[in-house]
Image 1 (spheres, rainbow, N blue to C red):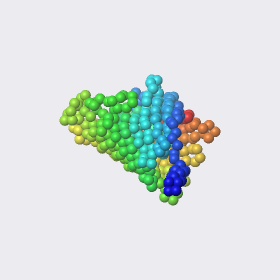
Image 2: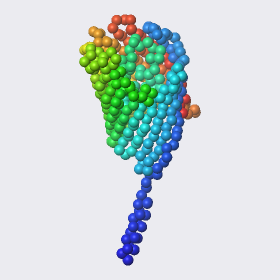
Image 3: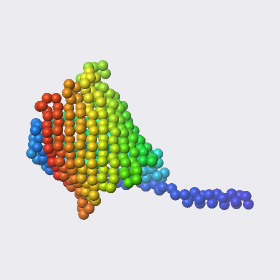
Image 4: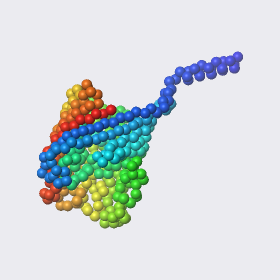
Length: 374
């Protein structure tokens, strides 16, 4: 009798366990996505060397990617992603090649992808329209007076882009999320393979970010802070850390936020790269400090924005540094009658003042564009 009762209890327990919902494993399925952007743009500028003035047609971006994603029986989702783009020369470039794992414990991304110090940033640039305004592609035919990268954009020195890295993001709890990325060598990615250890790249790069998304009444709030810390390699002209051409370590940071209410949004951001990657012998070198401000109004499938960016830097380390001021206005519309089609227009004023006058430029840039995304 006792054995019968024990057997009956076991059957009841088994039936109860069987009734507990368990996520069914799903084998990876394959999907594709991409977009093609075409623009016509023109510029009236004081400095035309190398770029000229007038107008141009441009296939600004063409990208294609595929994703294979599945679900484990414990509920974890996993995917492999590859994103490609085609250059003007017709070369196929691998932009992102990564593996992503998502579970209740957070998200892990390994491979070629932006780091937490970039992906978690907020600022005025976050709410600009499809031409990306002061943080966009105007540099394709605006002469920036020799300035590059973060010297005329809302970005930080030491950004590793899609270099091969490992990243972890916590689950978002009460609106708060923390992310960290580690990049052994900023010059290594899918296309280049393992980078040379003596070619001037940044290494042992740690990118950290924290952001918050929430609401207070009817007001949406987004806040963020990020930082990047890394060592700098010597290169062929500075074979040791004691060389006169040795560079300072990377140490840069940003803060920013966005407030939204009833279709209106206002964003502000600030970043400082300090003496990151400056030649140690050049004590006046400054890789750049920036702040930006932007406003957006959205109604239906249409968005309009206006933004301003100021960047001050002194990479040459001379008595007077460089000052960049950029104003932008733009509008975009997504067509409900033709899903995937977006059109936009924008005007950007770019003004750069450098030491002397040979590299100064005042440019007014306009652009209209469209894309099909699928």
